[in-house]
Amino acid sequence: MRSIWAGAISFGLVVIPVKLYAATEQRDITFRQVHRKDGARIQFKRVCTLDGEEVPYSDIAKGYELPTGDMVVLTDEDLADLPLVTAHRIEVLHFAPAAQVEPIYSNKAYYTEPEQAGARAYVLFRDALEASGKVAVAKVALRQREALAALRVREGVITLETLLWPDEVRKPDFAFLDEDIEVRSQELKMAASLIDTMTEDFEPDQYRDAYREALEAVVRAKVEGNEVVRPPGMAAPEPKGQPADLTEILRASVSALKAERDKPDGSGRAASSKSAAGGKGAAGGKGAAGRSDGGKAAGRTRPTTRTGSASRAKSGGRAKPASKADEAEEAAPRAKSASRRKASA
Image 1: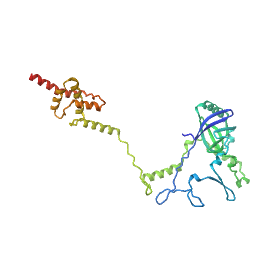
Image 2 (image 1 turned 60 degrees about the vertical axis):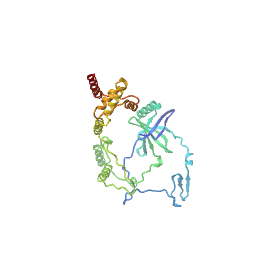
Image 3 (image 1 turned 180 degrees about the vertical axis):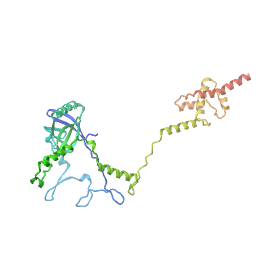
Image 4 (image 1 turned 180 degrees about the horizontal axis):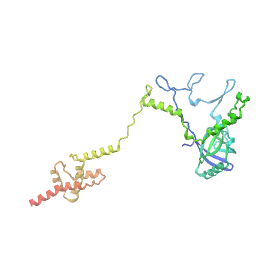
């Protein structure tokens, strides 16, 4: 979660630095307004009713309309000068029994998280508040608006519930409240018995939004049936390549290396052999014999000291060591040449 506010809980002389996180989220499916004919999105523009011109957002101000139709225009500077005593504080005003804060006053809920420096004071306040069975009535300023709030503990976390102001809760004004409707005692007992029969613990996980699930199924069926409209002029999304199978990639890599080593044109294994032979010829003084005999071998390019130097240059000034099999192949022609020299002698 991402915090939306940072401040402190002010409780007497105690100040607890905290962050606020939204405790709830809407899971409704959102729709766009589109043109039924081609599926193109509908746009709304901010237009001045006086001259019909579109107004940029930077030129829009807040206006309070009077009963006469006149308008009081308020700028950002006017609103910035308003005092917000609780700008970065959750100021606890007093404590009250939890039952007195009726659910109808609840507006939105937030989780509080303590900063590291205030963790101990946070836990102390949380435990004391939970043990008291009360809620803390407080004031807090969120999004440039001061609100009444209640602090209570839920699952080990102090939650902040913003509350509606008293004049924001409507009074019920219905005709039947003034009528004298008689209810018989036997009916009241039967209703109470029915309530007892249907009473069970509230488990939120047992309930689901059947309408939303059905709506998601309708959308999913249309997508699977390719009932999708792309407005004219809208570029198609780039197709996402499927991830290759790692086994096939490794198998192809091995085959490519084998083919490279079997090439008779001086690459692959022959290149390694030339490097090894060149290095030995330069170091041991037998380079001439090695080069003459190596030149007689079918399919082999005459290795020279220059080639060995080039190999060393490509590998950072050091010749790549040859394998035992390559050294054996290079040693065979030299052995034959040595035996012929002994025979002629």
